[in-house]
Length: 152
Image (cartoon, rainbow, N blue to C red; front, side, top):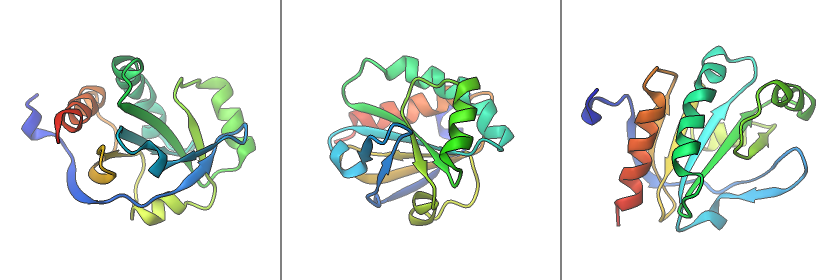
């Protein structure tokens, strides 16, 4: 597969700030991550493609988890903490999972389908949106993150 053929949408606009909590009540604020490339995995437990994407996102996590300037957050869209907790007992991604109970992130980013992967650059600009699952998803996301790492 060639990088130029990625299924992605170039956005290049200021990323909407948000603060969400994980299941333990710890808060995560997007603007506090300025200076880092951020990958948001927006998903729900009922979404088959979202579940199939987990191993692909794990590849991205394994590639970048020891890198200081890359952050991966899973953003659960619209489900109760109980549903998310039950899902995470079976699927245990190593990246933080945040609760977007009111779908504020989906609304702020005008996201209609999931899974959607939003990539935000070090300056806080939403650069790319990647919708859906593919067998190449992990590699596609790695390439996009690397592109944003080297961009000034």
